[in-house]
Amino acid sequence: MQVLWAPWRGAYFEAPKATGCIFCAARDASEPRQQLVLTQTPAVVILNKFPYASAHLMVAPLRHTADLAGMPPEELHVLISEVQRAAGVLYDVLRPEGLNIGINLGAAAGAGITDHLHWHLVPRWVGDTNFMPMLAEVRVMPEHLEATWEKLRRPFQIRE
Figure 1: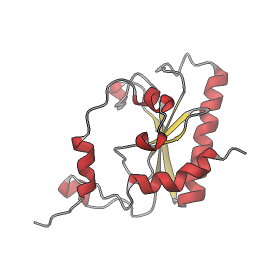
Figure 2: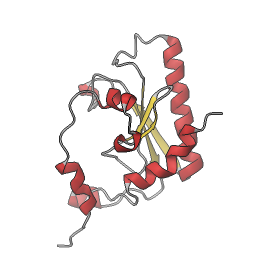
Figure 3: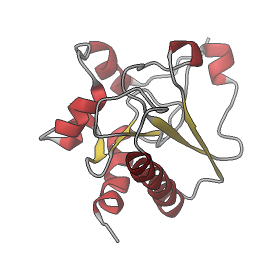
């Protein structure tokens, strides 16, 4: 058996479990780096601490809500515009060959956080999946989250 060493991952298991809403905490964070917040306006954009792939982002409304159907059109427009901007930043900075964008509403649909809706943006490259998740139940991330945050933070702070 071969061993894959990733000691930096220990921080996730040793960290106290978050209470409350991670998106509201990110919106209100005074130290964005600690929560991997890329921007807090006009929506909350954060790196996923438990990503499916490198640079997996989440975009959430500033308001704590899970009600997509009841969202005012103006608020939805702002959010979709921020999803579009996030996709553009990912393409410009990381040059992925594709991008998965999705939203899961409710636990039955796969939402891990059900009370604050959010979009997932997952950059993809041809060949980015391999045998590790199937055989060893391990995902291999080629870059540390903090390094990805450093690459992406400035483009998110610059507004056109």
